[in-house]
Image (tube, rainbow, N blue to C red; front, side):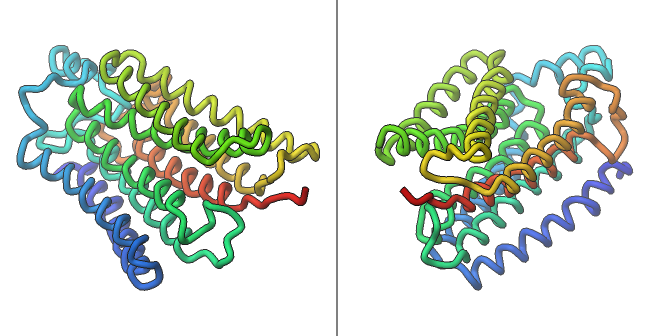
Length: 313
């Protein structure tokens, strides 16, 4: 067993598994069954799919490999390794990147726990223990873990779509949630706007990125970039006293930006844009830190949404 694999098992899998079990127990003990049951079932189903498809179906060996992995297999050039982590034999190709994805599972369970135990009456729908919205957001965050695991474990072309789609779904939810709020405040649009926007974004981007894989990075940038721009404009409006009928705690927004800034500081030099943080055999993989810090940022985003209060007319 290599140092990297040993570190993945004892430094990542063990602590995150303990955290997830503690959160699951806390959910069962303190949250209504209609909240904790979907969260735990979704966790078991999505993680179970990783083990089933990896161990029983061997990632469908006849399916095409990821382009970077295929080129590495043909040339042995370490510069072709996706996100700098070297490939291990067996069913888990990049153990640090795979098991660090458990951070998203823990983050999603934590979001559901926070949402399900918030006091009533709620200040907004994302702070409402009886609302489906925070549960959906938590399920999306949970899904980001196994979806990314598919890719880093298998290095298959089809798996890269799931990794990308989970990020799109997360960004699409945030973009749709805030945009629908603004359209409601400015023009009186109904709550259906949120679901129409969310469905349109994930269906269109999901289809386009499946059939045209080269658009995946651009789809992430456009969706997440549009969301960040709208949130930034909202924060500016709040700071200047021009809030559109509601406001959110800018502190949570700042913390989420900080978390993602650190995440990008790990992602960019470890294969995201550059490769000066590249050591294929090291247990300290920048992409692993990217996963953990992004999961922290996702929790901060929930707290930001849940801090919303309506302003007096």
